[in-house]
Image (cartoon, rainbow, N blue to C red; front, side, top):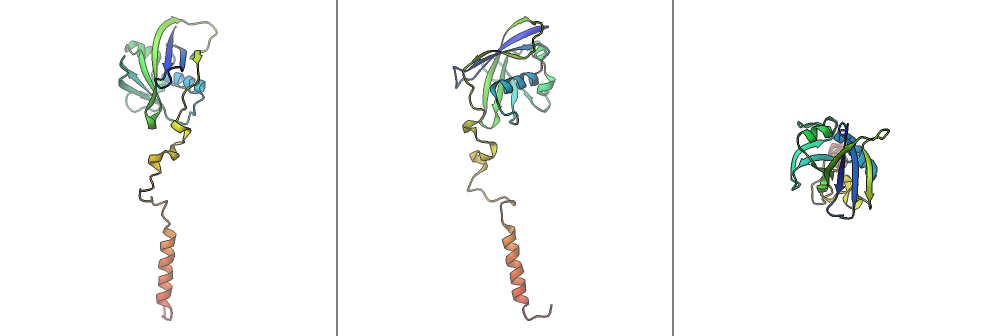
Length: 176
């Protein structure tokens, strides 16, 4: 079986670098888990792979869940190589459209007794997974003070209380 070396980089942190080795039979999901574990990212956050060209333009989408083109767990490195895909974008912060560049560098022979995928080069700390480490619920576009309150945010009980009081005030001294 073939093993491929791939380089993970991030434009805004040029000193950050990771290199991984993946078997041709590994899926994008296995690579995703390796990256998440290596960078100590919160696995509850959504991530997605995109095949891309050398100019890093997004093409096919490989999300965690199948949305028509296949999910991460359905796509192997061998399938990508067969489609001549050697550049991927790994979007780790969907809300801010921040992605790592992942480039397949070359092929080597599998080493016995080695578990893949694996980290082979680790230089410097990765960027924060989310900008300002804010959970999704704290992102500004979700907390717009000018937005009308949702039904859950309104205090409908006050309106109900006022109606009940008016009913009783109007009915004082009347036979009900």
